[in-house]
Image (tube, rainbow, N blue to C red; front, side, top):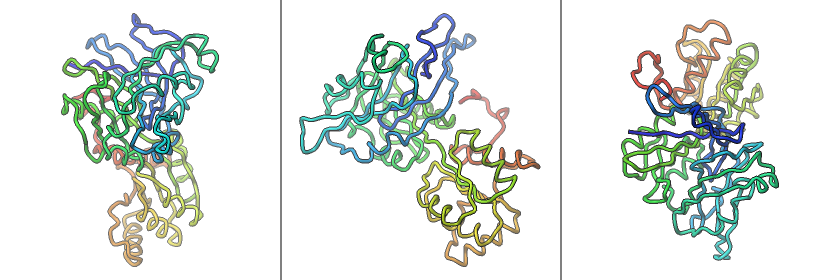
Length: 383
């Protein structure tokens, strides 16, 4: 049996248990970024289900993670927030020890706008420490929080986090970290590449993590498995998308991407497109609308040279064959990563419909889930 709690951006300073609705907060902690969630009681099944709100960026805390040394550094993750409300979602922190000054610790970033810093700095960098932070109304008012409340955090040595998980963070790949909320045991990480580490109820925990990855939003959830409470912290970066081309089709794909929360660039400049491909990550997309051979082929070649997680190319099958031959001629014989003709077969006819098909294929590729109708599934539709 599993009991699930989700945590949301606070709009009110209260918990309405009778109404089956909880209000929480949006936080980003130690590279695990937590998005708006709204938890409502499912009276039919006697459990709580989670509906996700907007995603958040990983960029705010990725640099501190990249530059932190494993020795003496601690990961701060949110377990649960009650009643506190922020006016923005800029929180995120790790605690580090200066190698040259072993007794000196600093907080990089902020949790609860600094209210938690003293408690974070007092934790032992070699131990896993569950932490409760009480925020009084005067404290909240002083730093600009909406109201007081309570936060449950878990501070763990950065060395306890599986190395693969840190690599996934660095590559902007989706990842879910799992840990017992009481600090016991070790960490488990689940990504599209597989899973590393282990917690007691390993298989059930991995199944839950994969459901979270399929949902596609960053968030913090608490599940009770085999009588123990575990926190699942998901970090799924927002997509940067490059659309190469112009006209109604490019405009429709741009609008659809922005509707999904992507950061979208639209260009017909080869240099700008090549630079995007070089800095792209596994979370990003390159979508070629242009049929100009002087533009589409070199952009596709640059995308293949980079780590972009999705490469799409619009055009008929004959157009795809011509591009493939051109790529072969310049040394790109393996172009299996290119999705062309781009998009799922939804019977699309208009630019807007085609844009939906492209976005749907991107989601299926990113989450590693073959596209299928919800009616073909027997499990929960949000699973």
